[in-house]
Image (cartoon, rainbow, N blue to C red; front, side, top):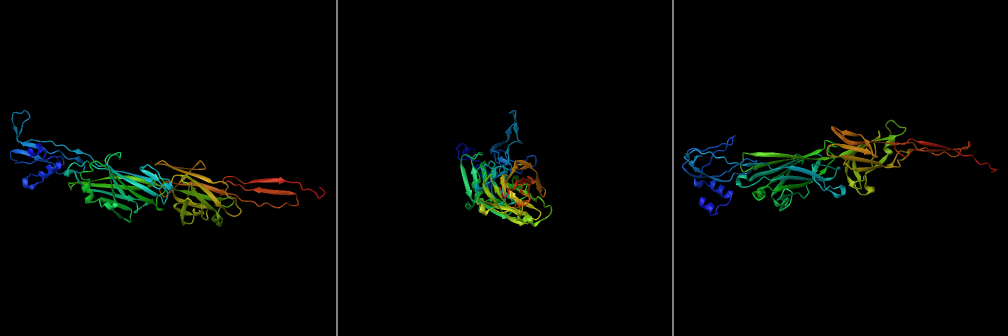
Length: 444
């Protein structure tokens, strides 16, 4: 063996491990180390031994280099022989990394370039996820990966199965250098769904693992997939978590470990109370009121389905005003629009109850979220936000008031004209102007 090494006929750890695993050579297999990392072998013959580490735990990034041990060895002072030498080979330990990020995917609904650990979106939006994992160091068959599996659980969204999922391997952590891309049809990974399609499992196949070992040692692995926000999404600051668990295993089958990472998607709503100035109880007149909602940040109109009286679930957006949803309050004047992101919106009243003045001005609503706290303003004034179940700050709250419209009477014999002007703004009170005009006589 020594001659082969000196002649560079054996250059790799794998070659030395092959020698160590060759049963025809009469190799000696030592017991696994105990919890203190200790193992021993008694009754060995005098000679030169090649010591090769053949199994390591999952958190070891590099197996110990093979080394020679002589029996006996000289004592520390060089004056005697040590027939029971103790050696201290060391492993470098470490784990793969795992991160999860998300962004809004479509240009038409406000695509964001950067992936972060949270994003906001509206129901129907396609959200794009990234799972990033730096692979451990793979130096020899003792450190080969025999399992590398991601289990992804999603809430408030549905996996977009037609998304062109890819796995990219980058030579460097900053995603520079050599890059290799796997697609679904490469048969190097499998994707399966379970638990009513709310769990996605991405498994490296044998062909994939054979390619990873050892060529992609310490490469950065990036999995990209898509999911759509659905109407079951939780509104407000609780958010909709998307948790991924990485399970990996080394050549030693006795050691399995996991990592977890999470990215959240947040969505919000409007809680509108419609009021008619002289009505304080339930009334069918509220059903004559109609609103339209535009996302002015993205320049699109909101499209929604009526789930129940006065409650709407957003389903998407349209650039056509004619295709926009007309929102109608219930008999109590309540209107809920659920499933919008943190953007600027314009609420326009397009019809109101008979004998009431239509709002002249649109209403501006801003929803803001910083990753932790959600706030809202109405016409640039701070407003409260209401809950969605246990999730706080879910709905931007606003109130809209229509005032009575007065008919103009004809000129009476008393010579007076009464001119009544109803308020046109939601918060203004009615203004009544009384004009006195002197009637001309026939002689004049």
